Amino acid sequence: MKRLILLLVLSMCISAVYSQWVQLSTDFEPNYSVIAYDSMVIVDVYSSDNYDLAISGDAGVTWNGSNPFEGSSGIIPLFAGKDWVYACTRNGVFRSGKASLSWSSYNEGLPSNIIRLVGKDSTLLAYNSHNLFIRHLADTSWLALPDNIPQDFISGLAYDGSTIALAGSNGVCDSDDLGASWNVWQGLQFTTGIVMIKGDTIIHASPGGVTSKLISSGTIANVSSGLTKLWTPPPGWDYYGTFEAFHPIGDNIFLCGETGVYKLNDQVWHWGQTGLGYASALTDNGTSLFAATGGSGIWGRPLDQLILSATELYHESGSIRVYPNPASGNARIDIVLSEKQAMSLSMLTLNGQLVRIVGAGTLDKGPHSFEVNCAELSAGVYALILRSVSEFTAMKLVVQ
Image (cartoon, rainbow, N blue to C red):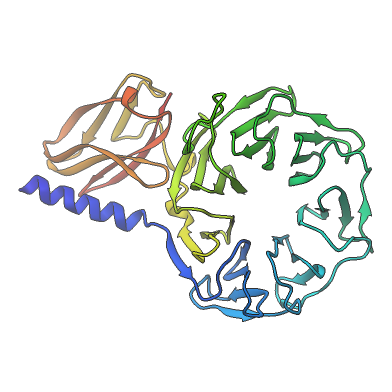
């Protein structure tokens, strides 16, 4: 009975600390694009209610409809830069300062059918189905990049200040000279998708899974571990559904699409499911992650419950030690208690999901050992949480 009570208390503590996604609004759905900064959250409204946007000034608690683009119906991709926010509408590209939300046309030199806009520092890139355009914030107009893109149409764009990556009808291509020349990836299935750039790595997600390319070496690898596989059609390709958006936060990468929202553990290239069903866009304001989910509205979840970073976890501490670490077979966990007390030792994913309770009960003062069979676990990084009356200690266990 005491053990049952302890397990229930532990479960309640985990639920309280690792909260789940919360639905913030369905008043202005469906929503397919979202941006956030400070306490502001802005989403597009794809409906016949004569609203272009829904805006919250209190991090999603209350919402108001807005019509700054004269009822520009359809999906409105949004982008947030350092000081400005941008909207790609059927009536052209609009820009507003973050502080005032006063929108004005930002179309000089652009055609009217811009699909999406991305940026890095003071440089913006925009694209329509077939062409790329560039503009520096100090410029007075957009300029077209060379018309030599090896794509029949573009489905995704990424830019990090030196490299451009495109996804489209012919797979993925990248350029390190602002589009003067392109490197085309070979051997991809289900080619159309989305792309992002993180350091020396370009990442592409499509219904065939996720693929990475090291820019420095050109090495291409499939990195789909952890993604939900929907089916395997002939001739044996894996099918993971549609992916809609990447969202980087520091060293962390989130990915959303048909099967939910994932977080990448790039130490072992494993995607962890954080919840939700279909999601079309992600953003954050530094404290919460927000997801646009089409007809299910806007959802949010605290970032500190989604990101348990390596700086918050230690291979060893004064009271807990794991070896071997990384592990692929049995891992031994040693703990030291300063006095006889009730304790619990639990294993969680970095998304806050309980994997197992390694040990729980009242133990004597001194050293104690536990064993975990890592062969039963998926590859990835896990958090070991030691709770007792006198302390709370967290450290990481890497499973290969």
